[in-house]
Image 1 (cartoon, rainbow, N blue to C red):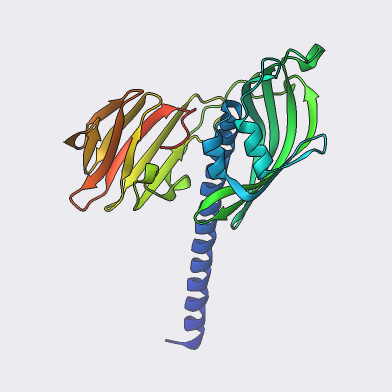
Image 2 (image 1 turned 60 degrees about the vertical axis):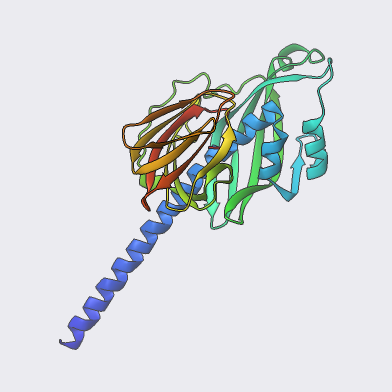
Length: 289
């Protein structure tokens, strides 16, 4: 082959590999951004519910929370505050709604900015502050041990009431997502072990009251046994699995729909050395599936 042809072929191959690497990196950043956005909303739901157990897993050991007044809480103080039972005259948080969320991912570090509308009932607040207030904030996450942890939160500004262009007042957008853009490799939920691939569709959709995702349980993985707090539906798309529901075992396959109710317990694992592919749907306030 002539020398020029070899050089041209090599250059073409190099360009193709560079384009492939660039596309793969972009897809990875997109998946990370979706995962961070979903985690942001789960954090706000957990704070509103004072779900210290969930936040213990998210807050890094060196976590710091700086309020807009300048008051700084370290991790221990923040967790103690969340675990403290509110008194009769303390403000009661009804909800914390994210607005104008933006996510930047830089390798194993992510920056989020946005606003939080805190809806509350505060008997001590006066005028426009009583029903709630809006906080502007910035956060830094780091990927540690294969999962994202929250390093620091900074509230930068507070104003009374909801933001004027709040997502709660605007028409909510319809969305289309492809599983290749949201795929996330993770251990089996609830201590199931092994490796699974989750597809958290619409994780950053504003105002969405449910969680809808696909999960692929690869051989050797499982959804570990756990007790239900809310209704949850599994639907088997492909593969065979063993479902343990309230202690009873049965085999499930494509076309099987499973409804688990509050107070029940279940676990699921693949059979036959092949992937078990399921769809999952449950109320957004659940913390882990």
